[in-house]
Image 1: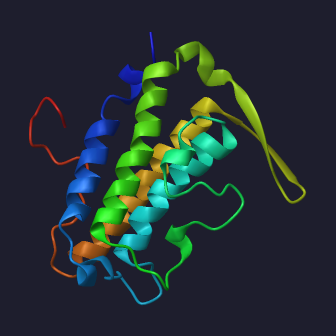
Image 2: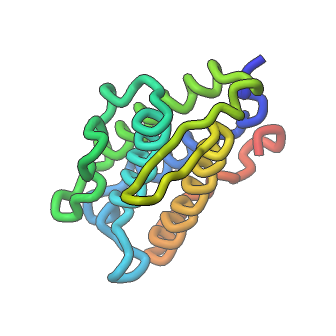
Image 3: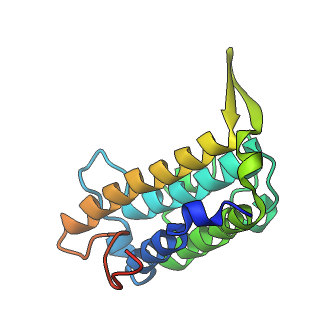
Length: 171
C-alpha cells in the first residue's frame, strides 16, 4: 500500500493551479496583489522550485535533473525577478515538478513516512520526516495558492481556486 490514498486530491490541486496559469499573458503574469508582493509568475515558480528543494535536494528523491531547478545551493530562476518567465515556462516547471510528487505518492508507503533526514542551515540543525516534508509542501502550496488567488482576483481575473467543486465526488 502506498500513501496515494492519503493525498488523493493533490493531483486535482495541481491541475487547477496549472489551469489558472496556463493562459495568462505576460502582463497578467506580472500582476502583483500589492507593489511589495511577488508577481504571479514568481509565486507559481516558487511553488515548483520548493518541491524540488525539499523532495530532491533534502530528501534525495530523483528527478531534479528534469526540472529548471537543478542547482541545490544556488538561487533558482524563480528568484530572479528581473527575468520574468512565460506561462509555458511556469506551467512546464509546475508539471515536471509535480511528476516528482506523483512518483513519491505512488512509491512511498505508510511505513516510510517516519524516515528522517537532517538539514543544516548555518548553525541550525533540523530533523525532518517524510511526513513533515509532505505536510510542509502541501500547506506551502495552499498558502501560495491563496496568494495567487488574491493577486489575480484583485485584478478582476479568475482566481486560483484549487477546491472548486466541478464534480461533487472530486471536491
